[in-house]
View 1: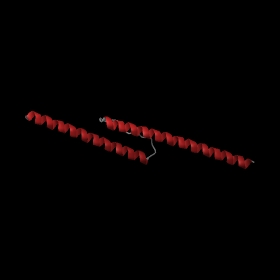
View 2: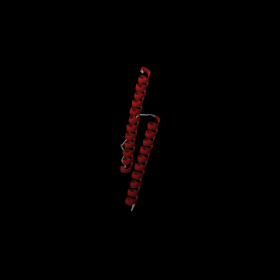
View 3: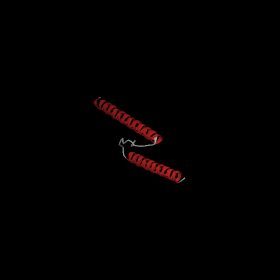
View 4: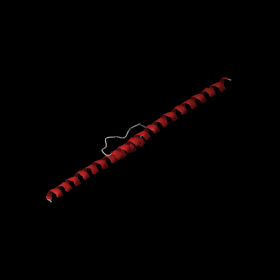
Length: 96
């Protein structure tokens, strides 16, 4: 009977340690995302997780970050092309 109690206690301790570890990882990801939102870097979320569901979430977040970076690059290219077109038209109007 005492062995069963010890085994249950050890299982509870292991469960609590894993829970604390996963909560710490979630907090780290939250901090990473807050830092990402403050800066314009393309920082990725750390994927060293033990929970498959949390890891899948981190993968989705990283894909969203990639898509946002691509959208920002596309917007920058379009703005640059628009400025060049306006500069060209302005030059043409002055030389007429």
